[in-house]
Length: 398
Image: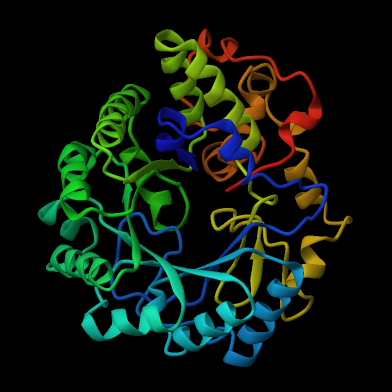
C-alpha cells in the first residue's frame, strides 16, 4: 500500500516514524485479512476469492471464530479486516466484530456496499467497526457490468452516504483494468463529491476469477498514464485541503515511480519520500499482513492462496505465524536472496521488497520471479538512493 497523500503532502518523517514498529520486537502481523465467508451476492470479474452464492460447508463456526479472535488478541494483532465473499452475508458478523473490539483489535469492513441500508449501517457502527471500505469499479454502467448486477452502483452509492451520515470513516476502492480505467477521472470526481475519507486504487491481482482476465490488466504504458492522472488528482486534493487520502495498492513500483517523479521536481521532498518508503519496506506478505479464509486456512496474504501455511483448527494462528520451522514464512521474511536477478540489482529493492509475489507466480509458475506488473525501465531501476544498512529495511507500517 502506497499513500500518495503521505509522499506528496506535508506529513513529515517524524510523524511517519511514530507509526513505525520493529519486527524484531514482535512477529505479530499488523493486519489480518479474514475472509469470513465465501458467499457473495455479486459475481465480479476480478474476485480473487472466486466467491459464489453459497457458504462453504467447512466455514468456521462462531466458537472457532471467537477462539481465533482471542488468539489474535493474545498475539497483539492491531487490526482485523472482515472480508469475503460479502462479509455482511454472515449472520454473526456483528457479534464477532463486537468481540474483536472488546479484545482490543481494530475491526474494519471490506464490502461491496450493496447491503448497507439505514438499518444495517447502524448495526455496523454499533458493533464497533471503525472503517468501511466500499468497492466501486467504475461509474454506473461500467461498475454494474463489471459486477454482473444492475443497480449495484446506486446501492453502493447509498452505502457510502449512509456511512458518512452517521460518522463512519468510509473509503472507496477501485481496481484498475483496461475495461474501467477510462472511468478514473470520473471516479476521482465522485470521491471528491462524496467526500470519502480514503480512495484506494488497486492494481489487478491475477488470482481467483481474475486469473481468467489477465489480459485486462493495463499495459505498462497505460499504467503510467493512470499514474500521471493519480499524481495530478492527489496533488489537487492536497492543494484544496480535501482531507481525502489517496493510495495505490498491490504494486510497490508506484512508490519508486513517485520518488523518481519528485526527484526531478523537488529533490528534498524526494529524499523525504524515500525515507518514508524505506521505513514501510515494501510488500509485507508474511511480515506485516496475514490472511485466514472462511475454513481456517492461513496464508501469507489474501492472494497467495496456493500456499497454505496451516489451519487454525489444527494449530493456532499464533503458533503457525511464529514457527521458525515454517520455510515459506522464513523465505518471505528474508526474500531478497530468492528473488530474480533483476530484482536483486534494482536500487529500489529495499522499498519494494520484490513487489507482488502472487502475480509473479501466476504468470511464471515461480514464486520468486519478476512481478510482471513492474513497469520500471532498466534505466529507472538504477536511480534509487542507497540503503546503507540491512537494518534500514526493518521497521514497517501497513
